[in-house]
Length: 366
Ligand code: ATP
Image 1 (cartoon, rainbow, N blue to C red):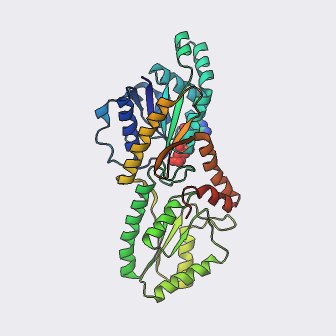
Image 2 (tube, rainbow, N blue to C red):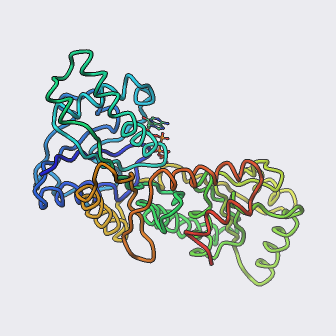
Image 3 (cartoon, protein in one colour):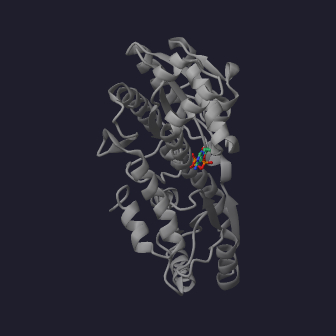
């Protein structure tokens, strides 16, 4: 009979609703009270009706919706100790001792900070007369668990993050739509897709759509790639293709670490090949729409496992994040996985691409 809180934080991802629904229902099924915290850490600090007890049927009809129905936010206040102290008070007021955070590496870092500071925050609240001595004695620890929602699939330690499969479907739909007009007018299209430090969406979209060329951050092209690309595009046309498709991840760079923009690729195609070339930046459309069946199931499985992890958690348990490995739900150490994820970005910035691929390789290796 624990009391669980659940929130979504950072960028939204299709399938987050399935995870929220699963946490609420699995929690209730296991005899817990479950509170939904709206607008991420912002709602946790605001308190009031932003944190409300949720019943089984309150989460009906949300699994098929995109985004997150309980809202998400970027909250500067939670990065300050004072904000986390208010969050701590709001949790104690509702007897919430177990928290499930659904978000990216930033959100999980924030959750872990709250957990680490918990005892001292409780002491502070008591010395400020905000909580009683009994409350101080009762709320000794905060137990947390993380679920990664990220359309980029950019988290180390899990084969897939919630939202990546739906975003990939959306991209593939867009490329298919663009291909018909490209075919009609014999055009070349350069599509920019999301992925600042992670080429998963670009690479998988390129494979799914038989693109002519793809540029991703972890594996920048060799010097002189522009010539190779032009040769490849020309060859396709010589074989009778009426269109060319090039996919560029938003974080694509060259071997020197300079950004490769979709506009630069267009310039190459226009100037060197005289091709009628258009750029399409897919942007937020990749976050939109209904979650795929895969993401609904992934969110559901992760949500159920998260509740089991919270129920198993003791005062000595390390904070865990729920991951998919070889189609199994597993619990991995949260801060190790966060550190590896952040190391990918650092490795790319330091042009240590072999290290970035090694870290990424755990999710996409052959
Ligand atoms: P995305 O992958 O979509 O960017 P994210 O969870 O990494 O998701 P962030 O904007 O980095 O997104 O973090 C979301 C929120 O988590 C922040 O607005 C802030 O409230 C909290 N947060 C992030 N980093 C920290 C930190 N170091 N300490 C405390 N809170 C943090």
